[in-house]
Image 1 (cartoon, one colour):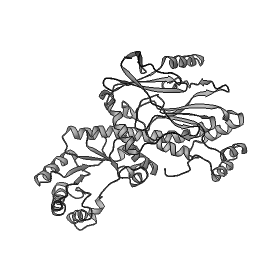
Image 2 (cartoon, rainbow, N blue to C red):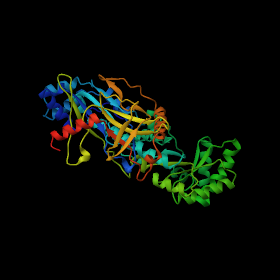
Image 3 (cartoon, one colour):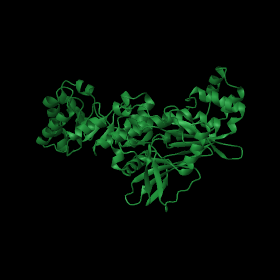
Image 4 (cartoon, rainbow, N blue to C red):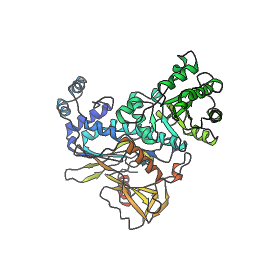
Length: 480
């Protein structure tokens, strides 16, 4: 995280509402908020959740220092009692979340907060911006990685990212989504995502000749050489000079780990010509890396054209998810606890039915087929429901209620796990490599039809009968 104290990174109305909660006594109420999203980016079949580690860091450090209090006092809007409350502020609630790297689907909770009203309200903005951003990038990265069909994908986007945290945390999310490394050095330092890189065109232009630039670099970094061959003329000078230097400097030392990089031109054509030239020169071990405004669709086309590529460096279209740059996560009140401890469900209604929320404190179950191991469906249930996997269970497609799926031989797994209890972190945060490996395994549990780029099969997400009935009661009360 680039700034330790981000307590004022919130929408101003969260402070005005919290001031009001204190004045009318609502600050004592325990409330429940769900963070969820409504639509998969790029019209895909699923998203991949990321950003929980940064949420944990934020909650652990959440406080208002003296400069924060003085700033708020200067607005002449907040009661002194509220400012005194903020001086002692610490998060004391519970948070449940879907682990990073898990495939997720629209309208199911990614994260649930149970906390006193002010605490739950003040953390809304940071939770949304963090989960929205990293989930967006992890999802885009995974699409690109799947398009590469087993070839390595590296994240190259820092210089085109939206700000420093967009670059740093975006590279982290891309690694969760399946990229094997990043060009962002700070992400390596902070999170352990492998950083790497060799040269830009400016290195080559600094020398009197392309050959001298290549040779000097190989002599300086013989174990880490990728030569950029398109500064002048890829086929007439770039590749021939690279071949010459590899044979003069690296091959005699027994080094076999080297590559060339193509960054412009017709990548498919040039990669095929490059492969033939390298093979004819006896350098079959030389890898070919390509970059230049790549995304999943261009990579898929290159693969269909038989391009000879070992590694893709993907920049702006990944780090900004330029084809679908907003992940529409929202944070909605779903329940309030009364003085007797009863959890009272709450709902938001709208003439736009897509914006009607699913009420109550919930569990999310994912059902897996016992024979194939594949994920079959998800079901949103009231917090106290227990699933009996010995009995058949009928699941409705939430997008077309006439479509059903009956599960018979299945296993149920709860997706939301405790992260904070009574303000204390109880979650054993996995390493970034463990998260990335978990993500790969979870993606493998999805049917191929759900993973299509165009018109993916709709994964079933349903409400339990109990939750469905509660929702209908609330809709009838509010006249929908």
